Image (cartoon, rainbow, N blue to C red):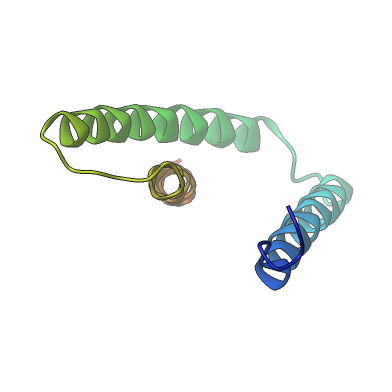
Length: 102
């Protein structure tokens, strides 16, 4: 594989995004711990939202399998992109929902 085949700029931004997300997660948890924000309520919301997002992701996996059985051709990259987008969006929206509800 040579450098002409690799798209360096998108790869750089993906790696940069991962690093920035990790840094933001670490910094946010550090500041939240200083303000006593990592309490039982936070852990309950986190557990419920993760559970809900995995249930939604499982449903989307079933839908994608059915779409595949119907003959629709999806690449691996697009399928994984759909799954990642749905999982992260459902995690975010369920966390917001439980934050408001609880």
